[in-house]
Length: 158
Image (cartoon, rainbow, N blue to C red):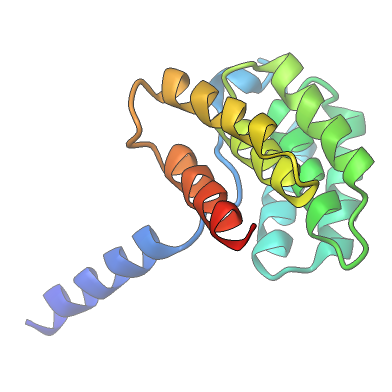
């Protein structure tokens, strides 16, 4: 009984944790250096802790090692946007690069949509929401639901 309750609690915690990004298999080049994979893992861990300086340091090296990795660019954009002093120009630059590398990158569509809401451009955010619906094939994927929620909250406040 205790084991099944513990298992249920662990499953609930895992499914309720917010996703920082979506690992996109098609986005990673075939020969991603092992160091870059480690740096990406370290960056994700730092982002979970909201340690933006460590995340930025790891991702800055990772992008030099793997400049065609959409996940790295997506997380760099996210980190630039979430820092205490956001650099939205850099965030857009990296989200755009992630989408250039992989136009189907769900995480980059979600996050650039959220960035557009910060810049009070809901129409652009809604375009990325439409892109997510097309990519996901429905409205049931997490990225679509998260961006839809952000857009609804934006509209309720404005």
